[in-house]
Image: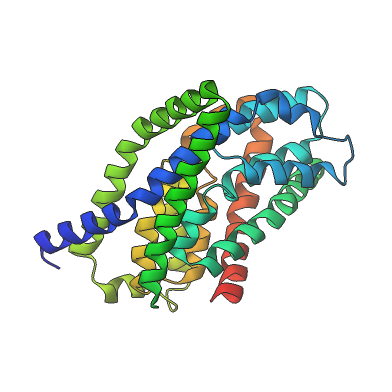
Length: 138
Length: 166
């Protein structure tokens, strides 16, 4: 492809998707403003079986910089929440995106987006369990 | 109605839904409305450099990589090389995940394997610049094991997503 055509094609593709990207940014901003930080500490039950799924669910719904999930995860850990639950929360935070799901569906296909997010949700708990098991073994 | 028209309608609906949400928030609590707007503006300023990077990448791929080469590297017959490109690409890519959707959508149209796109997206979780911070919170051992486990599971995830979504 010649340079002019390549430049036009890239600009067109990005501009075409810009309203959706802008929408996701507005949605992330809204979520971060509505949900208080103290919310996270109150939802864990202290159960090794249920907490990882709670962690994954919260991590899936919320969006933002991974650094925020580390800070919250560190806080949860210091308050006695299990490492499996905290890791499930962190992994789901970065791999599952309910807030971005409409944008992902529009740009990459509904079936792809739904499947990828669902599998990522299940895997967030499995990855956390495998990591903690390996840490215990090594 | 073809796919392009449906997609365009979904985009308009999506934007209207978000504007409607903001309208509700504005009516209920103006403080949260302005806080959300400020937060969004902050994100927007931060993502501009990444958007520029995505634009440059799209331009370079359009300019120098033919569809045939792309399919050879990341198509159904790419094999281990394809997985390696997807993992490394995912780890090295910066910024929020949604900024990469237009680029990946372009690659998908050009014939890149679904499994590699899913694998790329999963590896976006492994962020090199954030590793020291993660280690500070959870320890170096957790960091190394979690990173390795996630890279292995990115391949498993890619295969499952491809099997289901095609």
